[in-house]
Amino acid sequence: MIKWIGQHIVSLIARFRDDVYLENLAETTQDHVVGIDADGKLYKQDKGTTDSFTVEDGDTTDVVISNGKHWKFVEGGGIDINWTDTSNGTSSDEYDLTFTLSKNLQDLLIDAGHSIRGIAGSDIVVQSTQDINLQLDYDQASTAGAHSFKITNGDGNTIFSVDEDGNIVTRGSITAQTAGGATKHPSKGSSGNLLVDDAGVVSTRPVSDLKTDLALAKADVGLGSAENKSSATIRGEIVDSDIPALNASKVTGGTFDDARIPSLGASKVTSGTFDDARIPSLGASKVTSGTFADARIPDLNVSKLTAGTLSAARGGTGVADVKQIITRQAFQCNFIDDIGTTKHYLPLAGIQENTVRYQDEAAMLAPCDGRVASVTLKMENLGGASGDITFGVEVAENPGTGYAQTWTTVETETFTIGSGDNHDTFHFHFTQSTAGANNGTSKHFDATMMWAISIQSDDSSLGGDGGNDERWFVTAVVEWDWSTYLGTEGTTTKYTSVP
Image (cartoon, rainbow, N blue to C red; front, side, top):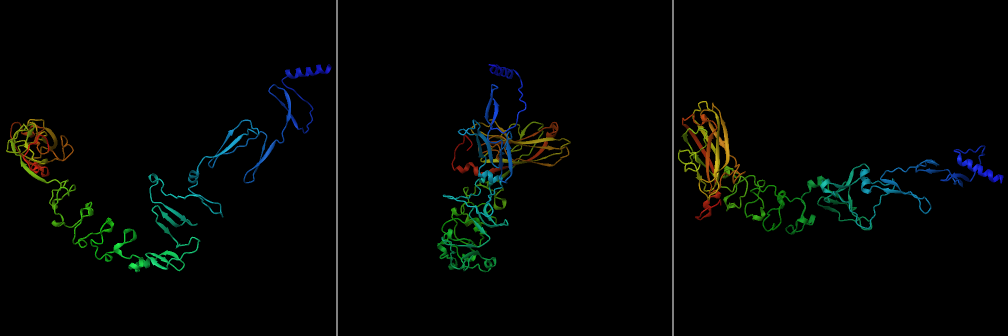
């Protein structure tokens, strides 16, 4: 009874005290330890078989991992290390630590400077049950260029290469072997620039041999009948002496590259006829000198000359389009008047200028397309006056309406005349239309349109000095394009619109 009461007294004291002290305990080796559960109750358990363990790396360095220490696996070299299962840790549900390759072989090759290296003293073997493809310039959009598959020796020198077109270059000789590995002996001798020795080794001929032995008979190269050989069986260059007469019976089809005809001089083509199909594009780069006889150009019509410039020396005018038949006509447009600052129109017929553009002296009906090329002006003594003179080209574009229809100013040219420019000559050059149906072209008007040339001063003194008439000497030059002449239609007809 006393023992039972004492046990309960101890139990109560232990529960209501913050600390429990055990004194004078002896240290002995035990197989068990005392633990405390969640309710504060003491319990006994096995202490385990060890408090530490030792690990060793590839360099035989040992590290002791004791209780409470942490061991970390460091990622790198394209390997990711992560816990993928951290529950339980029992024999049926272990902790999982996963090692994953984060880079493929291509990434590893890039990181390693595009190199694959084997262990010293060992061969590198590439095996496959299918074809092995070594591809150069797999992405021409980003790595365009001429590249080669190369084999280098220990000194870094290229001893063998194959470019992307299949051309082979080797520093050594080439030896042919049978399927069993034995040396295969082709016929000793030479073929082209290759030599075959007694051992069957094929090598290139020295440059000195090529310089002194260029004349090969047909039998030396197995050429047989040259007339029957296709382009696939003939390589190299054939000099003039090897083609004594390249007549029509020897060349019946195919195309000659420009490089094969470096100079087609008159001495090489003395007769015969070229079919149109043999001269698909006779550009300027192919004809740089010489003279075509009339017989070689029987009909030089529009279909044969569609672009380019025909110089004056060749009978043209130097204009951009050789299809056009251009002539220039000068109009004397002199008059006497005080024009003040009012716009007037030059007399294309007679000597009477007008302020109305469609008067018979000022307006002209175009029989073909054309343009005002220039207006040249000379004035009397300016009397100290100065200012701007403006010439303009105006066009009535609708041939189906009356002469008083809407007119369009298609181009103007202005020049500032100084007070000291007495009796000087002023040239106004027109370039292209800036408005109307022909806007952006060098043409001012089409056949069936009406046109006139205006003149205007911005200063009344320059225009005539307050009621005193002045002499105006004016010459206008017009370029006519007779390839658009209405008479080429060959009939008498009417036009209600521009043809």
